[in-house]
Length: 347
Image 1: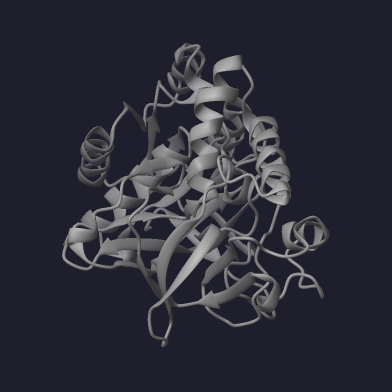
Image 2: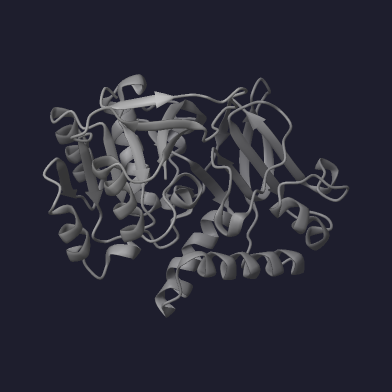
């Protein structure tokens, strides 16, 4: 990051805090690479407005990428051009592909900074560690800061989730893993909510409400039981029947939810809700706010910890940053751990 000056003036820095000020080292501005996914929710009406905005900045490289292989090609091209800041103009799945490309082709300490635009259907990751406002508002502020000296920026460092099968050497990287009801909920949202023209956090909120009510009624068709072997950090594998299991490095999910309340120091937030949990509607408000309560306790079926890693024996589908995957038990256990940190630009 030779084209940036980072100053940490915080008296008591905390992990992941956005407090380090950052500014371009030269008046000409840093080398910036923009990856645009024309298929993401915010870009489906076209990229003409983005391209017009970028046209006046000769040091900005713009690459279109729809699938992970195209993202990897763009990231390698940026490395050849010594790009210091990668702007992701896409959704959560595009961010997942960028993180995987960066962490499998760069040393973490040499990876470029990331700036995330809200250009997806839900943009859950960008709402936590990205630039506020629409994709055009965020991009305009970024270019004004980088090349015209307008505004002030800070650097936020966050851990990234590494996911790998025990017998496979090709890891994936992201910031949110989910199985059970989360996997089912994303499928329902894609097939029943988005097809009606409803998107963003409203679609996610409607899906959450449906599954909460179905779970409270014991509706197995809507919220099926999922059997998963879970081996938490330093513990033996045990089989759990769960409705929901999630692992994330994000501070907030959609609608500002923080459904994890562990007290340990680990970088991974882990939460599981067992099948047939007791007092679900009473426990839900505190769970969604990330607060423990007399209802959200293990004996009632609610678990939450902060971990450095865990192992899963999973035979059902799962999601990583909104992308749906089918498990492959022949590859052994699924390992989830912190894969390092990356820097996000905040404006």
